[in-house]
Length: 382
Image (cartoon, rainbow, N blue to C red; front, side, top):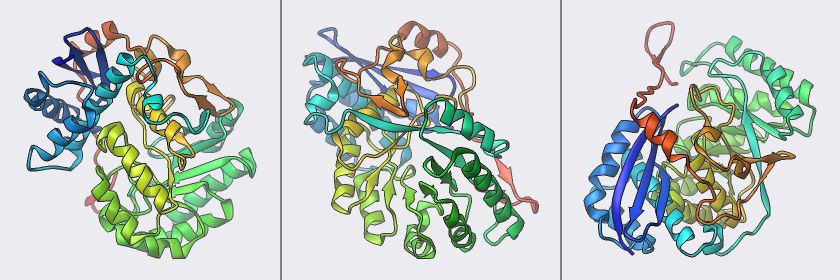
């Protein structure tokens, strides 16, 4: 069996799908994207095609190293996202070839389901308490919210108070046993992060996410000393070597590698095992589409330290199309009592609606990140 063709598709709301065809008829799907740079990642996948045509798709480890090490320049969001989508598609082919779910090829399940959480609110959250209660009534056991609007390096405490009021309103509505994750989204710098983390303690958050950017990962340990809340990060790290530095600095309790950014299933499974050796939990990042989510679930099924999974159904970014629109078997993503069971179907366990994918690609999206500015007109972290 050999790889015969690589197809790439830009589909709404902001995703890039990769389809790998073989000379024996087996086809695999992956999701290769950096939000806001989908066309760039698509072009990177296409540049890698010459390395792939004629290769045996079952030799995933060899192909991964060919794409990573064979190019000399390596790492970073674009290259690793391109590799990620290709890697997912190769695993999908391998599972279909052996008529087994990917998780069976990776050692088998160590759990029957994984807890999932739902997003509430937008980048400038309003009415979050009602939204959180709606999610609880829908069966979810946890939500995540953007904690704050833009903050200067040192800012006024009225913005801190606004965050506390929102989180307090959620906790009052949903009770003490409901998980609340608060995403700082890298918008907060160390001086204010220490203040905010300390004051959020009384609401018992499930975790705080990206209290500072990973460029400043040495600060996580200092922030951890400021509070007793688990700290999560990792969506903007792209390889086991990036995470090696994070583990060295310490202070982080949960890692959030993205299966479409950090080298795919092959790489994230290794990152998860590294984290387990440091007694760090795994919660894969996934505000993306159905292929990315299906790939995450393969790693969740086989990683002892996985505890919760992000998913994008209902997220404010999904305009025009959403996760279930692209799959023929939406039951693969049924949420029962706040959990999702692992699909027994071969490969990634999802059947992609190629007709819709092709139709969407006729008018490729051009989603871009919003640009925020502070009152003094300096650029703010989004």
